[in-house]
View 1 (tube, helix red, strand yellow):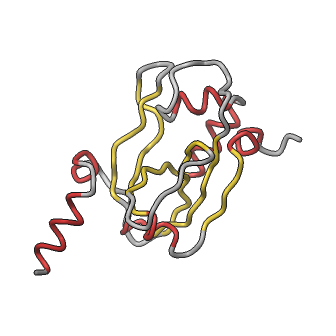
View 2 (tube, rainbow, N blue to C red; view 1 turned 180 degrees about the horizontal axis):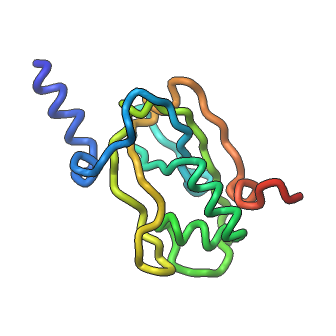
Length: 142
């Protein structure tokens, strides 16, 4: 019975996330899920997240939501998007994250940011913060 439950849980995790390198265990890191504003996730939905510090560094360097979305592999166009996006920030225990490789930067077709995965329930267990993506990219600027 336990083996069946483990195999069902593993079936929800994308294959690349089972073979990629995970973050160093025994720590907590801040990770971010970037998604269109109205998109929601159920407790058992598997989310792909990036380290918040890496996202903040590249977002402030790029100073463009469109470029940040390209770097995340979420958009090919370099024009600013018409739809609104949000950034959901979590503090996640690293031993509960799967390593999923890296995002694909659509501007360069190279590797983007490190990519991790976990379920919403795992990520949200200690709470979360939701920010408009445009404000996140703007950083401290008004």
